[in-house]
Length: 400
Image 1: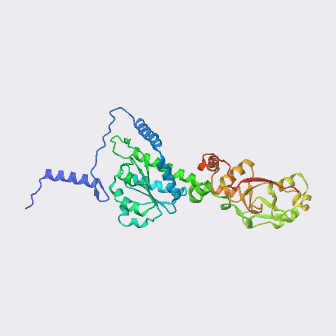
Image 2: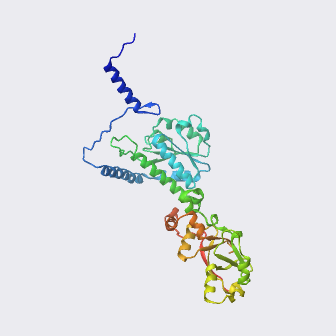
Image 3: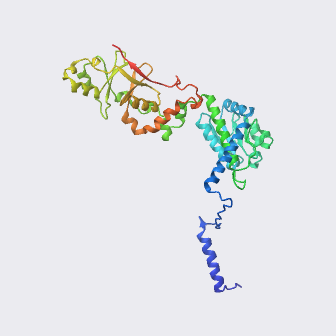
């Protein structure tokens, strides 16, 4: 027989029910934990934040000193890999592994992340005999990771471990051990992965970037893998934005000015320059709308019957096919011009870049900053700021 609640008990249960309902999120009752602000030492949030960052900075300095021959071996394993690189880790180490896979893929080394929990439920089927596996575990004893090691040792071309110690289960199973050492976490409780994951992240970056540099990965390659966003726009090649030759005004230099002006009209938006070619089809000069306006301002229009070769600009700047758009913009700004003809290796025109087309895809500031960065000797490991493999902007001075 049910016992009837008195009015006081009824009100109490109503308050309890109200509290549960007010903290219910998506059908899951969550108990509210009161915030207890503790600041016994009198430190501000800013000072404590700086302490944490400096603590992790100190750890990175120690990790740099731990690099040894195993790092060299790990680099060689990745360079010799004829298949993919798999990264694997659990928890926060797994998140670092995902980032490492993304960094490797974007810098020339095909990679993907394999979750250890999903691996034992079928994802081991993605492994190929030529794969290299990078396994991340701070302790080196993570159960979900260590249970995979016998299979990885038998079924892959090698294991690289990123862990605290080479004496762990993971360290003993690996072909190369990248040690980060044991460190006090920046967390006040020494529990939340912080210093350890920062060390893993930095070591992964070092591995990916050294491999990329030794592959000879260039900024053109980087642009190929990053076609989207502002980064992709900065790394576009000139042929992606130029107006193709069938949309350009082009004529032979032997024609009269009047003939050229009449016969080179094109539908749609027109460029402000006419490209002129010699008998071989190579660029010999340009005649711009500004050239025409200046002539009409200072002399009678009798020159319209002359050969355009007599009035065209022979010292013309052109850009080679394959040149980066950032270089094109830099040249447009420096030379104070609005058009740049694009040529092939035989100096035949294949298109033209108009400043209005450039403005539509990117802003000048972001381009010039990137252009300055790419000339640095440290860029992609190059010691030569002007690589002869990169198409150049060159002046052409056509002589009669």
